[in-house]
Length: 319
Image 1 (cartoon, rainbow, N blue to C red):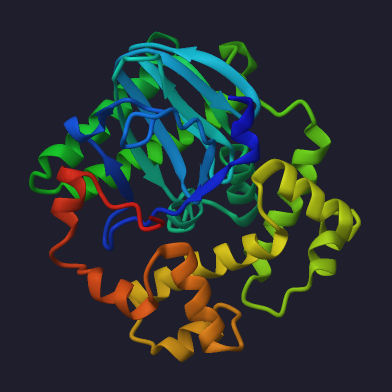
Image 2: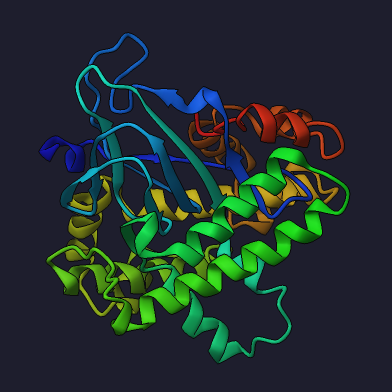
């Protein structure tokens, strides 16, 4: 899978309105991973805008985390932070059954009023750096909580949203604990070039905070204490994208939340996420999400689409 790093692609996902997670559950996710719809090998690495937690029900193959390739089998659990390169490839001729949930930790934890600013930032640093591959037996408590969360989403019985909220909080705190406790001997899988990752992290943190402003490449480079040329190079090497493309991605991600939750017109949304020109906003939105802001807003039915999204496998809005 060495070519994966050269072809890494963004998979843009959106959590349904009124929910705390996006879930890909059920038989739809029994397939030949690492192959296209015609069965041809496609080992393209990818990364998401959300935290991904996946569990292998059965099957075997390899997983790519960062630049490390490892085997997976039944009961393998993967925890991958947003913007971290990863991929799953089934063994030749073998289908695998994976189920996944996706969470926006920053949005979720900001609603937990017991956190002060420093504690929230400390927890988020741990969550946003995580790339873990472990077997169920190695993290039994985490696995049990993950199963409970998936069962709540499957059944959607009375009060399930409150249960989901509690379980998401518990899972995130388990991730913080897992990454903190050396005695568990669970370590994040890191790119060997740690300094490069730290520079990218600083750059992304700056963009996540200032995306609504008139950001220049020099501003991002200064925030990461590197030159503009080095900034462009490490983004290209790590994510196969430019810093400007990442800025647009963050802006469009924020625009989706506004379109879903607020009654602003398209011009107002564009201005709010940092686009001075509405036509440029629409062009970038369609390029990333696959449809115009108006089309996307029409398709997001907060009252009716959630059940189908959970039970049948929610859409990938980036397609």
